[in-house]
Image 1: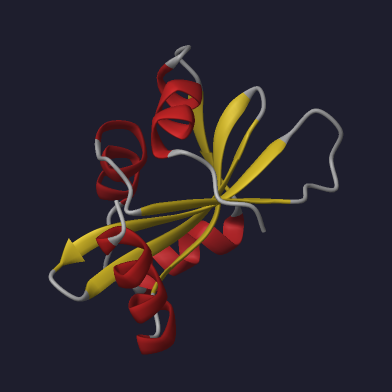
Image 2 (image 1 turned 180 degrees about the horizontal axis):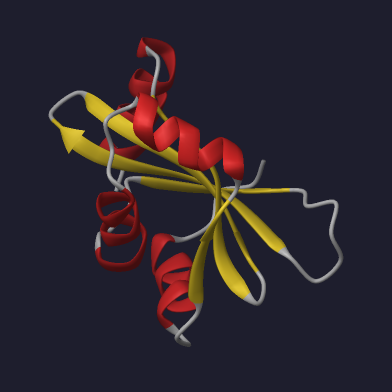
Length: 110
């Protein structure tokens, strides 16, 4: 997965007023992780991520991203989102220690 500059990701998300959509899985994960949908939307639209990686999308003309946000020191939220006609949240989770270390290491290089 190639890393995407954070400014590029933020520009894509903020470039137009896109509706926010959730997969059924993301809605369930939001409840399981005690993350209200408003918090997820706030993170993605208004916060600056620690790391953005682009994934290959199976849908033509759709961009898919793995996005990491600091929740508090040493703890990150991970969102998988697609950008097309909407901002669609595919899944969300709290990260593992290995991923936290990777993201913290990447973040420290900036």
